[in-house]
Amino acid sequence: MIGISKLYCGTVEPSDALRYGRHSGKLPSHLLQFSSDKRPVVVWNMTRRCNLKCVHCYAHARDRAFSDELTTAEAKRMIDDLAAFGVPVLLFSGGEPLMRPDLPELAEYAVGKGMRAVISTNGTLITSRTARGLKEIGLSYVGISMDGMEEIHDRFRGVKGAFRDALEGIRNTQDAGIKVGLRFTINRFNVQEIPKVFDLLEEMDIPRVCFYHLVYSGRGSKLVRDDLSHEETRRALDLIMDRTRDLHKRGKPKEVLTVDNHADGPYLYLRLREEDPDRATEVLELLQMNEGNNSGRGIGCISWDGEVHADQFWRQHSFGNVRKRPFSEIWTDDSDPLLSKLKDKKQFVTGRCAKCRWLDICGGNFRARAEAVYEDVWAPDPACYLSDEEIAESV
Image (tube, rainbow, N blue to C red; front, side, top):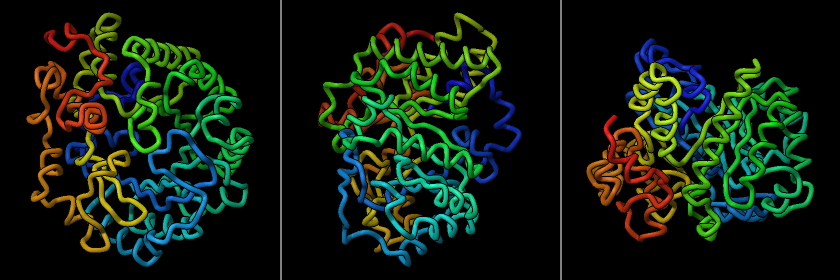
């Protein structure tokens, strides 16, 4: 996760994270990526059921009941363990999390245990009543997926009217006083929608947007050929930075982040080094705190059936099941060779990754993409768009 507004527009300084001691339990949400202990943010895909039919769904969600999902009682035991382990944030995802009737009960339970509870949703089921209920239980953030404007969004979501329903969900969330943001997965079919997403942020006064790079997983694995080329990715990043800076210059700042391609960090730094060398030095320090991709270390995933994964995209590798062992035990067990290596994967990556000047900042990028394309967990991430010259040059 690369904070474009934090880094490029100077809304965060290195001293901001240092002031809190860089401990995840003490850092406010917007500084968590700079923590030193990297207690994992946990994504819980609490259900596989969904009311939409998204073409890029990593969970292969369906609109039907699944019998293997954790029960409410099992989920509370899991939350007890996560809280005791020091997990700072529990992200309720799916499928569509609002299709589980016990979502409010479990989110409230997590908040009561001292965790920040957030949800990732398609937004179509957020009525005024639902939004007020989420506000009352202390939910701190709602991320709503958006793939572009109406035609593109409905095509990706597989259901006509999904765009309008999502907009209504955004309005209801805003009216309830909950922070809301957009989640946009970039690919060749919707990259031209990025300016319209920025327009929507401004028109609806939405404070946050996360632009996700495509990960080849689940139904998204069929979209490998539909990912941006390296040059297209660079142009998209330039556009995102330009539009973010424009909003800040006009006194309408938004929190803008890119997710799932940590080449964005060095790319942003190299651009800023030409424009503002003093700020570039500060950004480099923040990127070193961020440490790049943290799958299997600073982020983890628990599936609807209790299986534990390095992140929500890497379901072919399970490290254990919370029905049999607590997450805290699974996560700290070094006997699993993959999980153990992911804790310090920089020494295991190969090819251009191993020789890259930015390895400490990127963290080896996304191993799931490397495996999907090369059938080798430690091969270079094929979505890294930095040139050979850029990865070889001195900081």
